[in-house]
Length: 187
Image (cartoon, rainbow, N blue to C red):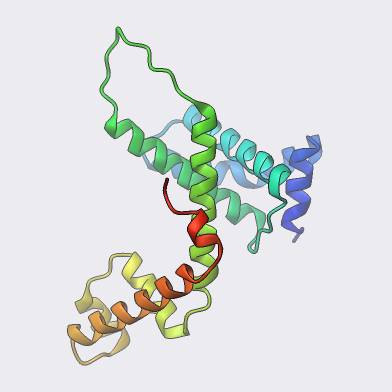
């Protein structure tokens, strides 16, 4: 497995071999995800291109580190971009006689901010106890408290609620104590 920075450096240098490698290893996963979530191949191509651009611009600016493999990281960036697109389309009112102007710089800035927030969250969730990681995973997958009682063999849903609350509180405390937190608050 190649170092994630190898791919980031290749993007910045516009290394054709590296870019082709990224497309061959990652594009079809992104296409599959977007196709299953109300998108087309053209949408997938746009999102993929925007993600690569976003990563290159950000890496050029701040030389950040990726702590997972590059493909997983890129896929997460693409998922976040597509979810934002879906949310934006829900809020739009279509009028054939009005042309909307989009500010791509604002979109890129918001994408970078969202990705940095995800990285901060991900850094700290990995530092929770093994039990809390499992509980939070179930919580984020929207498992019911009843299901969690059976999975963890707790005595009641109240116990599960307390565990979820304590794990969330610990996670919040760790994130808020990080120096990056204040800079990542919404403006």
